Image (tube, rainbow, N blue to C red):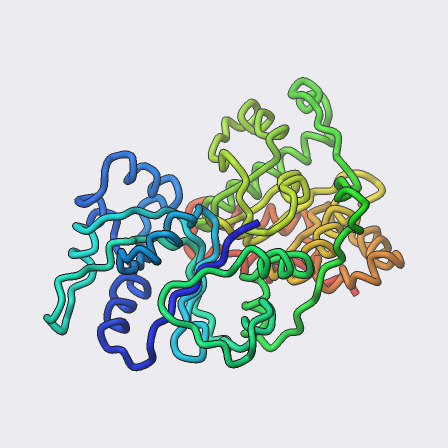
Length: 381
């Protein structure tokens, strides 16, 4: 269960707004940070961010703040609230107590204090939200007039009630920002264990892959989608059981070493998806590749996600030869999938469209994005 930390920024505070612009909106280049960090710290940040500029924020090193800071872990949610609105949400990627870095990044403009913001956190997936704070209070069970001050964390009791009914705070806030309804997920009964994924695709060994034309098509499409993801600036995940095939057949080894999706549900529901494009703690797109006659296993996996994470905002694609379009449409009309409105969430991406995109971006990656892939996919109605 991920923690949620809240940082209050008084409206109209010129110093806070200047610092926010400098180190969150504009972000901080790695070379500026590296001068104040150890080699191990720099390597850890590069693992998460590469060489991209990083959003950075900090708090005063008071005893109360220090106690919360020490509980802060990688992947926890972090919200900056300005006045009556949630200004920004992100994920904690790393933290450090670093007075020297604080002095470099945030000057005391009024000159009446030498105290710095020494509790420093590096923020992954920052997104400006603009959602009224009262919506957060409603979701977490606070009174509508709850007054937030300073650096605060949500209690375990409130977190437990929230995650009992909801999946992902990030997705919920994005939906609220867009004016969309928020859904509660179907939690398993107390006496029942969480169900396993409905379908586990059998993973063939490398020799079987090389000997089978059908499976080779599957592996070839995994490789193309993984390669396109890297060109689009995404991190790439394929199931651990498939990574050896891509290494063997295509000498491809640019995988994420472990899966961190930022969704509060067992990893098995997402780490077996054929190809995932993602950021540090966020899924940006999910692809299920289908060669079988049934066109069924990928839709079942997406159905699981729709039940357990109903507020998901990332696009999901069934990738299959164009002649299987009608078969995918027929499966989407099954009563269980219709009840979940899966055809509004899952698009059909023909092999042929992936091949066209791959050829077009063979020598350039400019313009390649999740939005472009979604534009080439089809909504089957």
